[in-house]
Amino acid sequence: MTPFHSFTLALFLIAVCAAPIRADAQNNAEKPATAAEGCVPAAQLKPVQIHGLWRVRFASAPAGLPADATMHLERHAEFSDSVAGYVSRDLRSATGTQAGTGHAARAQLAGDLENGFLTLDESSNGINITATWNGEMAEGSCGKKVTGTWKDTSAGAPADTPEIPFTLEKVPGW
Image (tube, rainbow, N blue to C red; front, side, top):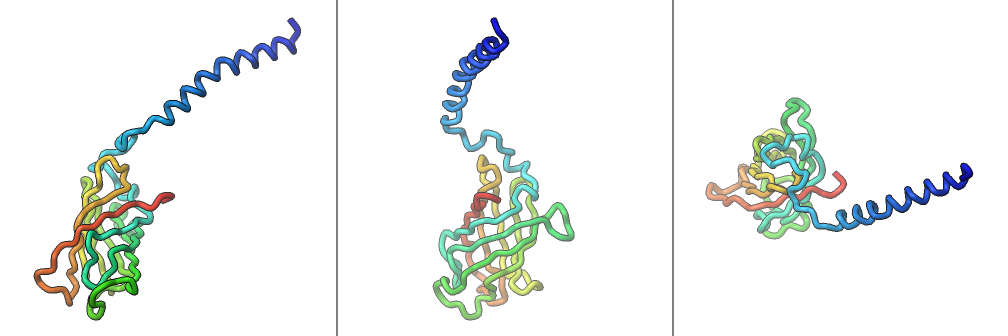
């Protein structure tokens, strides 16, 4: 057998052996994976794993604020085990009374992620806490979903201000 024929035979055998493996890999890729496969348990997530852009949705819009917003979280400049960032809202799309809400279109955030619980303080003026966010990482979401409540703590908020349920979903690509 000539070297050319040996080489051709070798390529043919490699192709024949690889074909079933390739087809099997495609079939396995099409099987739906469970959400928890390959995910770190929510309680073990670290702050760095939640850095990025998030979509905020409130179950019902807080008074004078829109039902949707965006949130950006990153490493806190002073405390490496904490997060900081901002929440952005389109106040033009808000329903209800906007005057005196005590909330800015872009407010600063700072907080912690510990044992799967996210706590954030919001400040519209960089001095006073104007709202609090308390959420829990959704188990099996691979750190891409948080559910919890938001509470208006601004100076203009009534004493009996209710907690508003929210959902955070990480924007793909972050």
